[in-house]
Length: 118
View 1 (tube, rainbow, N blue to C red):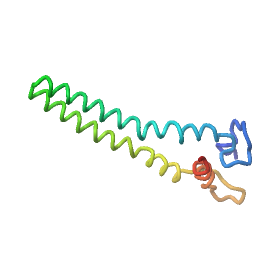
View 2 (cartoon, rainbow, N blue to C red):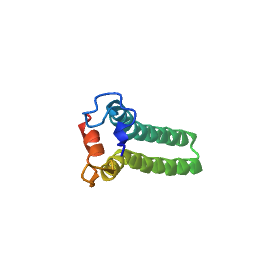
View 3 (cartoon, rainbow, N blue to C red):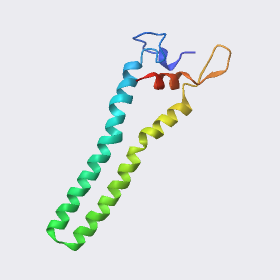
View 4 (cartoon, helix red, strand yellow):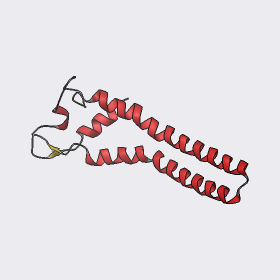
């Protein structure tokens, strides 16, 4: 049975990722930090700017709406911050799920690949 990491192998087959190391590295070291750090910071900054505009306009109704939007954005920021932890946990639970040579499921391949990227 084909392993996920054997499809389209470009690099060294003996490594944990079977050629998908660069893709996993981009996701783990490039995409996840942007999602985990950048997006929450932007949400909080935009919420603060909206609240500042509302306070300057001196409209009490607009200030209340901006406060509620800021609170929602802070909640979204915290949720987005923990997405990477959730994805890492799910990846370790799912692993590869392919059969090994003895008929038992090999569930360490994906986890080894994910954890070997530094």
